[in-house]
Each structure stands twice: as structure tokens, then as C-alpha cells.
Image 1 (cartoon, rainbow, N blue to C red):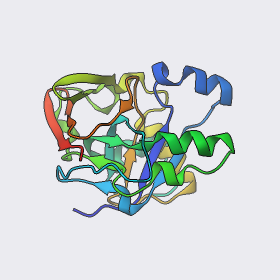
Image 2 (tube, helix red, strand yellow):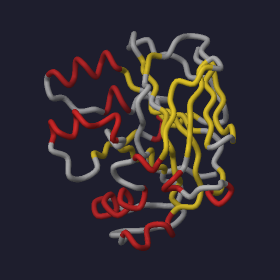
Image 3 (cartoon, helix red, strand yellow):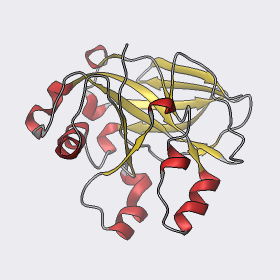
Image 4 (cartoon, rainbow, N blue to C red):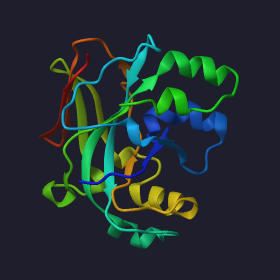
Length: 208
């Protein structure tokens, strides 16, 4: 399976984002991107990099773009994706604190190698609910640490696609990380991550 760009949305859950959105007066999705070497898949372990002492996880619904598109209207956006999984956006939190203090770009603390972990992609129609009302959760060492419902997203997947495609042409294989709910935290060596959409386990890997 071919993958292309990794497009991410920050502060996209109401419970996670109230303070951020009030401070920034956000009216559009906050978009950042990860490099192609950020992708980690197939259950491979995530190795804590030596440049950071505080890596944090963010569990997110991820969709894969299935058609080439530019300036995609909201009403047609649903035609441009048909697969979904759960992913983890890894952040070097100590670097983020340092960089944000001086207004520096996000790339090094957000798009380092293996920082975009994805589970098995499956057809959306497999699930009871559509993408706009989809339950997901992340378990670490058998304990649930994050739970979300895409119903609580500030910007829906279709709104994200409409917005992003004004600026960047979407290609088959592009991945969109749609944002994370409350519950983010630190990763530790030997942690066992398991991610679910509804009751379907799609993500399973260890921290090394």
C-alpha cells in the first residue's frame, strides 16, 4: 500500500482545545505536516529517540485519501476517503516547550522519524457508525488512557479536506490525522499500546 503526505490537525476536540482556541481565536483548522520518514506501521516498535526525554502520545482517527483532488467542496469530500484506522501522533514535548517559547516552527518536535504511528487500515463501512460518529480508544498496558468520539471534533473530516485542499493537492495515499481528545501523556519503555475503533483492535505495538 502506497502512502504519501501526512497531514495533521491540532486542537480539534472541544474538550482538548477550549483554551487554545480562545487564545488563538481559531476559525479554521490548525494544520501541520509530518515527513514521509515519520510513518511507523505494521506493529513495529516505537524507539524513544535520544534527543528527547519527554515523548508524549496523542491517539487519533486517521483517514487515507483515495482520490486525487484539489479545491474539493465540502459536499463531495466524503468521496475522497474510504479507509480509516487509529494512529498515534508522537510529540517531543520537551522540544516543543523550548521551541514554542521562541516562536519556532513545529517540524523537529512533531515530524521526527517514526512519530506518526498507524494501525491497520480498514474500510469505514465495516463499522456501525460513519466517520462523523466513530468511537475510538487507546489502551496502554491494558488500561484505557484515551477515549474519543469523532462527534466531538470541531472540524469534521469533510471540513478538513475542503480546507486543506485549497492549499495542497491531495493524492491517493495521503494520510490525515484528525486530532486527539483529552488524555495525552508520556510514553515509557516497555509500554504496550493497543488502539481500537469501536471494538476492533487495529493498533498494537511496544515502546522500546
